Length: 461
Image 1 (cartoon, rainbow, N blue to C red):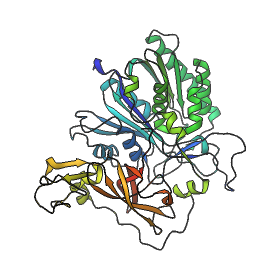
Image 2 (cartoon, rainbow, N blue to C red):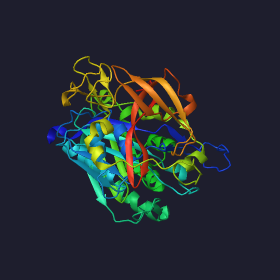
Image 3 (tube, helix red, strand yellow):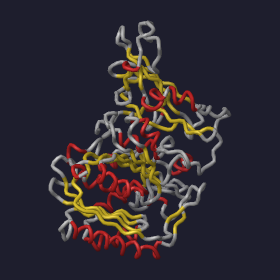
Image 4 (tube, helix red, strand yellow):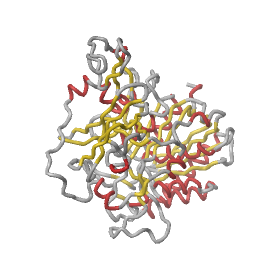
């Protein structure tokens, strides 16, 4: 599709938390070092994909293919992209496809630029406590839609190399890593060859912006030197960590945030071979970004204590309250109530115009039945809600000592009861403005229960 060779819209998502020390004694870092982007205890690849994509894709995306690239899918056999598809309210005719593996982020970007698909790259990086690269790994998401507004693809080249570098057996949580000194030169050679091939095909000797993503830090540094990169991408990575399948997309989004129309961007991803893309930045790049920039999100994060991080990841076994596990959701009601569960749809009364959430046959305001049908559904997921009541739950089964449960009135009508997230329970107060965010409530009987929570509104959006 010649009119869709490139990127029409993009967005990046960084969680609200950052880890700058892995000291069990709680000591602050002696010197500035790498900072790891950390997903909340209620986040995973699916929820981060939804948060990135919802800025640039809506229910009008009829015909788009939806791709989800990750190494940390929440299910092994089930298609995780289908959950993202449902939460975004995409047309049922749009296919949902999972891409797996460390190279899947570059593969998704390739398909976006060639076919006009929409894709999310999202990953949560699991490392053993105290691992040498614990702070050098991170969690993030990025999303792209094919087109030409943000950037035009000038050329693409790739090289495949079978290499035992990072791997994980089924059922394992942590990556196994071979000595990076062995794999660095192999990846550097593949990446430089792919990049020079792509530059030659684009008729260029170099690019205005050089962006290098690699699962091997030594290889990334060597490729950056060989291609004359400024190192700005390395500074972004030092503030987020290597974010797996999301990393090429995250670094490309950061480059597009800063690049000027007409400039060129060389993106190189070196993992199990290499992929190289040359883009020319489009005139509409500023309007193409959805949500805050990568730099804005880096600056707007909470520092997380190491003990809390270990508890969130299940790496620290802490005795919780003597309370039964939350019940697992059942498949039939999840399917019947998909509009409410995945898209936060309420129903608008045909008699008085009020919104009832969750949707019902009887209006919660006027009490008249029979006025709600499929045409009266209205999504509340992009609305601002103001807290009218707060309760603190001290017996939660979540990996937090307490969480806030709020009642909030939605702008334009409707009232929500939801868990608050991304803020300490004591900081959630009446009158606070909050916005819905798609999260994992809990997991019971091998079923992940996804629903919408409320997080404090940020003015940077």
